[in-house]
Image (cartoon, rainbow, N blue to C red):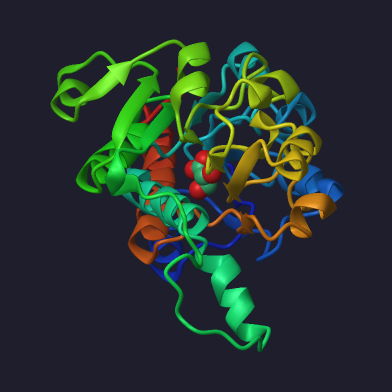
Length: 320
Ligand code: DGY
């Protein structure tokens, strides 16, 4: 018997149309993240949950769903919001949406790299402030990717590789850690595989593309920041808690770190007030995957994973 299919937040029109074809009663909780109690009520007797990173899918939610729950299809590549061990214990399949958001996220990482190093947002703010100005040979000088800057990619997986392709086209040198750092494509892009310590010591710009796990949480802390080159930049389009934001604010205040571009935040959706007050930080509201085609593709993949599992097959993109 098929139970209800709970979609925690409504998705694009194209995806909702596909979801209508899933076998079971479709329950859509709304546009905004559901209250915890509403989520717990709604999942009772669900066979599938299509969740977003804003919902914590832990043992309490899985228990509230009951024994008929077959799949949690997370509508994101990251699955740090899902208790994978609890799901495995209960025999619930977990899927995510890898692959379809690589280009959109890499585009945004490059946008943040260029915005911070070339001071785009700071300069825009300056113009809007109404100050008088005239072009000057020593004004608004920034770091230039094409002039031998070294980009350090922490976590050269799918998204990291998409960043590497773009950075290579801009003329940057690249050092990286991660599963693909020693592969053939990395070699063709001139990527040098290094240790994490070496990456932080050598890069002019560090960009984070590793998953959030117990091991990576808080990895960019005071000592990691101190190990960066003076005047370097930090970019985060991965997960906010990878970075200790108070430590980053200190490093920006001292001038050791020249700038930062953050699409994700340690205590999302709350934004660190010291970072909000800094001209040298570009802050975005977690929009890495927010390309129209990508958001459709993510939703479609999540719906497809549910369809496969409810039909008794493996999901296309299981989390292992
Ligand atoms: C992800 O997929 O993990 C992104 O952070 C949200 O699109």
